[in-house]
Amino acid sequence: MRYGEVLIQEHLSFTINKGDVFVIMGGSGCGKSTLLKHLIGLVPPSAGKILYHGRNFWEVTSAERERLLRNMGVLYQKGALWTSMTLAENVAMPIRQYTSRSEKEIKAIVEYKLSLVGLAGFEGYYPSEISGGMQKRAALARAMALDPEVLFFDEPSAGLDPVSSKLLDDLILELNQSLGATVVVVTHELASIFAIASNSVFLDAETKTIAALGHPREMLEHGKDERVMRFLTRGERDR
Amino acid sequence: MSPVRVLSSSHDGVLLISLRSSPDPVGLETSFDALDDAVSALQSGTTVRVSANEGLEIDSSAIARLFALARQCASRELCFEAHGLPASAERLLALAHSVPERKGTRRVPRHDPFLVNLGRATISLWTTITDWFSFTGELLVESVNFVRGRARVPVRDIWLTLDQCGPSALPIVTLISTLVGVILAFIGAQQLRQFGATIYVANLVGVGMLREMGAVMAAVIMAGRTGAAFAAQLGSMQVNEEIDALKTFGFSPMQYLVIPRVVALVVMMPLLCLYADFLGIFGGAIISSLTLDLSLVQYYNQTVSAVHLSDVWLGVSKSVVFGVLIAIAGCVAGIRCGRSASAVGTAVTTAVVSGIVSIVISDALFALLTELVGI
Image (cartoon, rainbow over all chains, first blue to last red; front, top):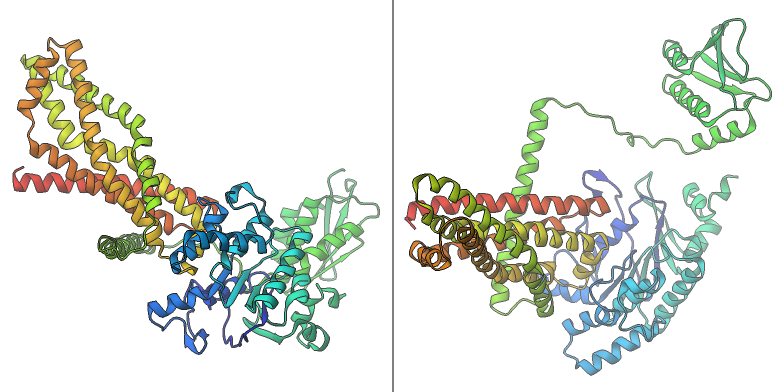
């Protein structure tokens, strides 16, 4: 993985199993968000493969890639709602584009998805008219619009107060359990990591590769890597 | 808080630095600047020992200088020791040292030779040109898809952009175009009066507006207004990750964002050009009737006899090309925008500058072409 000429990470190899809540963690600048951009097909990696059900995302045909993208939902760090559209239009746009549902059906789906994230009644609001936490939840409703198999979250807690952050964590777990969606979360929020992860990978900025792989609690209890322990204990291990 | 006094002396190969709050009567007082020079003259392995008198109050600038001194010692392999500093200063120094500088992080200012800078500028220019061409190529492919009904273009966005490019731009186009006609008439009247040929003001304004000024002025206004707006809109979308969100849903930003803007400008530019032509000629007529002894009917008859349909077509054709260029300039700058607020500002500037430059260049090419063809 490179950012321009700068090597960020190398020799990354891990598998995300169906139904996992997989957390990608590491210190600031270790390349978590860049890795996410590779996973969601925004930027091709400088080397290596990203396989979905055994197929390399960057080598399939454009039609196949579009099909793969339809099975992914992404919640961006800033929500990334389309600001010129209402919340309902944001959620409806992918449905309208990829399905042949009637307007009545689409309206019902939009209301249902917004209700799932606690935004019933906000259909006609524009993103600029609601709070940051609500924007993230609306963006999550949009990410779920096509009932994707995999949901990606980029720093879901960023900019949220602890209560909103906890609500979002609960929502992620609920979606994982009730919808059966595989969830991939990029975060460095320890509270979130321990609350939601069923599996995780720790990227180290200094060695530029994976420092640990597994459940974060197991890493904490049986981990040997000093940097991972320092991260998971907020540096308490040093004192 | 009184300023910290710095004293230095050498003893058994150790550089002793003492920090005090009172002036030194013995004359060992020095400054941190002088200390830097003294430390840089020491041989590696030498000890630099800093101490402070009891009750010394130390400000953050003195701590910053001590921190710099400690780093200088580390880089020159000198042994730096600090004793008796106020507890808060020691804690702050420890905090500053707690996260060591990562190797390769520091940027060294580069003073490259002229040829290297020239080469870098050439590569940058080449990248910009290839960027334009690749964007235009992609746009061409998507436009063909759009015409064949294979592109997923949001029709509602086309209507919104049409409104933004057309009716909303009318007041400024009205003002500028009328004034351009007025200016042309004044200049023409001044020169032609010398030959008693003031009637030809109508020719000058008519031909000038229809062939050149109507299209060019409308284009310059749209480059500054709409081209900049396109760059700002798309740039903000880039900063807010909205374009990333489109891509991950499998939507083509070219179809969703660029095509509606290009279509809107291509449709509106000829209309704005004709509107500007009319107002320019109208402005010229008003000035001629007020300052020259020309009636509006005379002016009208002279204009009709001077201009040809080919002049109108030439201006309208130019405006279509200008519309495409303005849309490309705005969209390229917006879509290639960086991820910060300042990048949006840069994108807007780039859009306006490249839009106007491309208008002027293409206008010159038009002039050359029409001269060759004889239009």
